[in-house]
Length: 525
Length: 114
Image (cartoon, rainbow over the protein chains, first blue to last red):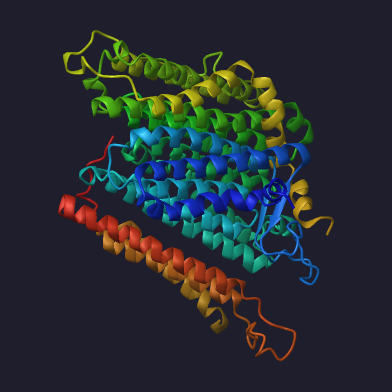
């Protein structure tokens, strides 16, 4: 067996193993020299990203990949002597998982590139990079696993690493306060999820998502489990009314880590969709649950944007916009869920709505990451996040200003940037479902634009301020990290159709196709 | 009734845990609430896995081919390990906050607002 075959066969395991191994060896490598450590971190991230792309390529060309840990053959999901139960831990990477893997890989590489210089002024960076790679492990694991308990374990790895990285700059205790708030909430959420796992195991004797999905009866206990799961995962992705941790955590984390926390929240969003579509699907009352998700989405959009407008702290403002944008994804996918039982409506606009919501996950990770990185550059150069103290930075930081404009126009849904493409899909399809929802979504977009015009004006426009007269442009690695994201924002905005046809539509169909997911794991049994 | 005693205990512990987390102001007490909740969920998992007269899946002891699947115990062990990590992290946050703010009362730790 050649190395290439080995990598292709074991891609799902390597995806988690590479960052995990690198994370725990960083303290050792860091003793050699700083350069060796940076090389080690970057190498591990690039290797993990390469594996993610190889895996995604396999999934998009030849269908769902399953990987069984510890079995004699990697695709032997149901051992012959187990009585038809998949007893081992199985990674099930379908198109939706592969789509999330791509998001995590792109965002991880550009954020890490950026943090090589943004964090270079701080000491004891081994811990920072170890936590960062653990976050990568957590996200890759959450989106790839096909075992529900395994999902919980990766969720906890992600929560612990995120809390550590939020508190990383203690900042007079402020960052620790934010991390405590985040961590207590996510631990409670994780305990809810574990209760739900216990309920499923007690009823269906299974932990595998496909097995639970196949045996799903939608009893009273399943309803309780559904409530626990939706509450916990919606809290973790920062949907209103469980959004209180988001602005604190996003504003106090180091800027580079914030850009990746966006992806971390979206891994929880993925978990929510996986539970709703793959585990419950049409056994539950799709209209009611769909409307609950839609209402969560609309609330997040409206409350997020209205809270963002009066903010003075640039990262806090962007964090509220992140809540608002999460609302769009919930709205799009919620509409898809609400019409799931009805084939005619699903084909008419349900799939378009889901594609819009899922496409928005990708676009959001790119432009919101870009915006947080530009905020990080400004903080790196002038040492404040207060909008009232900024001004005239456009004279000295031209590239940063251009990247900020790209990100701001994309988040406001202005063509030809990627936010427009996904928002248009959401508007079109949601308008057929319920015109009022589409109008709310457009109004929120306009408010977003208004808010970013204000921010742009107060940061970059105006005369040069004397205290920032000799501010320099961001260092090259930071510009490169932002450049990757900005290039993707523009390219996807200019050519959305190939992306939608190639990645988003398969992801949406994989999500909606419950029997396909079950078949890929359990076969015809 | 007696048969359900473990599950009744789970419910009672869950309520005690949630009330502690919601009403207590001291970070250490909040952590204790979280730990009580974790114990509740661990007890839930172990009680689910209990079979009267079941045989532990250790090959040298097995008298027949019918053994109890050890999955719930494995889940509980994992959950306990995660709980330890959780407690350690929250306690270290409490230490830093005590050093920086001089208190572990969450009503006084409120500098992030808006």
